[in-house]
Structure formats: structure tokens, C-alpha cells
Amino acid sequence: MKVNRVWEPAFAGGGATFQKVPLVLDPDKLAGADVVIMGAPMDEFVTYRPGTRFGPRAIRLANDAGGDPRLRHIDAGIDPFDVLAIVDHGDAEIVPGDPLASHRAITEMVGQILDAGAVPIILGGDHSIAHPDIKTVAERFEFGDLAVVQFDTHADTGTENWGVERAHGTPFYYLVEENIIPGDRIIQVGLRGYWPFHEEFEWARAKGMKWHRMEEIDRRGINAVIDDVMDEISDAPNLFLSVDIDVLDPAYAPGTGTPEPGGMTTRELLPAIRRLATERGLAGMDLVEVSPPYDHAEITALAGNRIVMEALVGLALNRAEQEPRGEDPR
Ligand SMILES: [Mn+2]
Image 1 (cartoon, protein in one colour):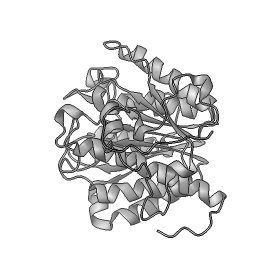
Image 2 (image 1 turned 120 degrees about the vertical axis):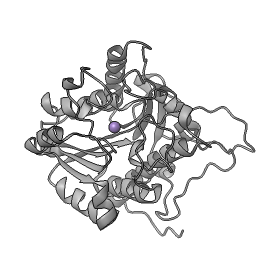
Image 3 (image 1 turned 30 degrees about the horizontal axis):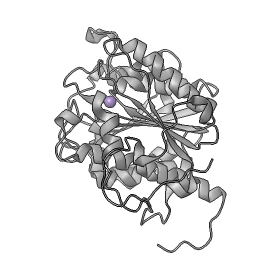
């Protein structure tokens, strides 16, 4: 698939797709795409401040300045849009007020992207969408062949003991309990604050889950922690990346529903995302919990946009490793 982008003489608004890539709503026309962006604009499962239903739009438009469309990453020396055919499939047919129907719509759309042979990148939306996102991808592989690296302040392993059956704080509990992902295939990075509770850590430990708390990132440095993550997922053939924007410190991502001070910087997170995608490729990814009503100066939306960009750059480098390029001066 050849995807052309246009030079826009000045900012003129519009173009509400990710980085203005073509909008391809017909699933039958996704064939040939390498990566397909989709939105999951729902937030009925949040436990505190709502607003992530506006996340996909804000992430897509966070960098919409017009001008030359080239996006050559100056460290990586590559423009992912030159290497990969990337299109935007619009949003899943969310049903406001019926979150389980919305999950079914997300399942259907992720399935269409996988049917086309492309990597789905899902823009949330609250973190409940990780359940349909990851389940749909995992079902394409043998049990245990998909590892999940979750960047998050919270483990999201809450149970029905909360008093609610499903919420944005429960997807990873159900992914394990429903035998979709083995516990030892989930690696969490960035946990901090006051939850999970002790008994939930005990459950996670018993299931073989692994986690790297923010304290460890602070003490050892992000590169050493990601070295360990690479080892921990080394025998899993496929990788799904689930990025909750609240893993960032509220200074770097104020626009989210359950902020927790003391988090990662974007300077730590962006290269980590790129490294995982470069070295392991991605079977899928979601980016969740960007909540524009709580954002300031689009800081959070732009961070989300750049997290996706780093994943695309990583995927492009991963592809380029298989098909070496010529000289590529920065
Ligand atoms: Mn989360």
C-alpha cells in the first residue's frame, strides 16, 4: 500500500486522523497496511474523573501544525511514514452509556485490523479497553505466546471485591483469571502511590506477575529496568504494549483521571517505548487515559501523540533491521 501525504502550506485545521494519515473506514480496504490506528473513545469505566472519551481526538490532533509532513526522528534517523504504511481506521462504534457494548465494538475493530495483517494501535479511552484489546490480539496466538508490558501507575488488578465487577482498574485481573494472558507474561513498569493493596500484590505474586515500581526506576535508572524487562519477555514470541499515560508524573501528563505524583518523565518513557518496539516489534499497542478536560496546554495529548510516534519509529527500525537501508545521515 502506498500512502501519500501532502505538504500543507499553513495550519488550516481539519485532518482529524493521526498525523493526517488517510482515513480508511472500510475494513476491506485495510489490506496492505502495516499499522492501523484506531480510537476507543469511551470512559464509562473510570472510577474517578471522566473525560478520556475525548482522548483519541486530542491525541490525533496534538501535532497539527501544517507545513512539511516529514517526521524524521533525529536520533533514529528514520521517518516511520516512509517505512510503514500507516492508516487511521477511525473510532470503534462506541455506544455511550453501554460500556460492554463498546467493548464488543472495540473487539470487532481490533479483529478487523488483525485480519488485515496489520498492527493495531488503539487510542483510549479508559484502561478498561485493555481487556478487549489484549484479548483479541492474544487469541491470534497460542496461550502464553503474547507478553504484555504495561506502563502504569496502577496495576489495574482490582477484583470484584471493589464492589464493581468491571472498571478501568480491573482489566489485568481478568486477563489473568480468564486465562487470556499467563500471569508471568505480564510485566508492569512504574507502579507507585497507594494502590494496589497488599493482598492484590500477593495475588499478583502468586500468579507470577512481575513489576518494576517507580522507586526502582528512580534508584536504578530506566535503562537498567528496561534491560530487565527485555530479559523477562525474552522467551515470549510476541509483545503487546499497554501504556497508561498516568505512568508519567502529573507534571508531564496532568490530563488524566487518576493522577499520582512522583512518576516518570517523558524523557524516560519515550526512549523506553522506542526501544521495546525496535528490539521486539509489536503485535499491538494501546495508549489510554488521556483525559483532555483535565489537560493544560495539550501537554498530555502531545505526550500521548509522541508515545505513539516513538512506537512507530521503533516499528520502522524493527522493519528496517530486516530490510537494511542505505546511508542515512541525520
Ligand atoms: Mn491503568
